[in-house]
Image 1 (cartoon, rainbow, N blue to C red):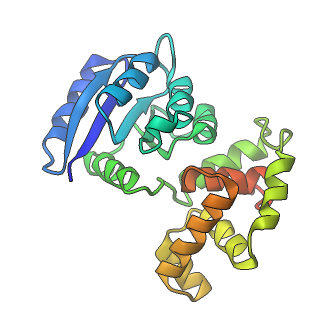
Image 2: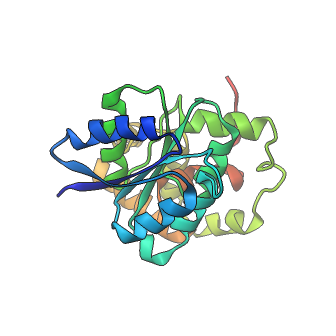
Image 3: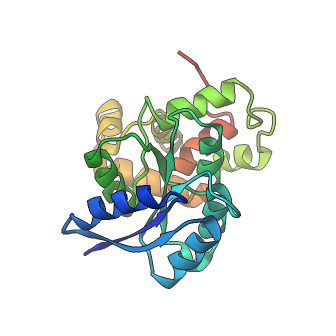
Length: 227
């Protein structure tokens, strides 16, 4: 199955470079290019995109607003969004994860990293690692970007619906660990971990693993720690 990729960035030269890279792969193709968020939302629907590479800073409707529009549209529930950022530490990234993005990637990443990010997102996973998304979320929470003071009581209450094991798995997910790593840590099978993750997502109303991480911090299940 070919992964349908939409490029959303206001820099035409950068979009062209991404197009050449993506189209060179046998399992993916670029189905559209957008120079602003509004066009990205329109093309995501029109071209039936699977993954959107979304720049945050664009004129008019920015990437954050576009991410929120796509993730809250039931007809686009299958679309996964990878945020492209110039800086690895960017306060907009936390907001984009809350809005429904599956993860983020620096624009200075290697070509193989970008292609892998597309495949990971298309597969329904999130771009999470202890040194990337999880670390960034913890850093901004610790600095008081508003999430810590704006903790959602409803999410904390919804954690009560989780089993003890589901809570344990959620803590590990918030640590940026893969299913295989969690399975090794908890001494269960990767399939069992996947089942617990899916059940936690359903109970908490999370779109994907990235939102599970945010919920874990917002609810207070995991406390931020800056190393």
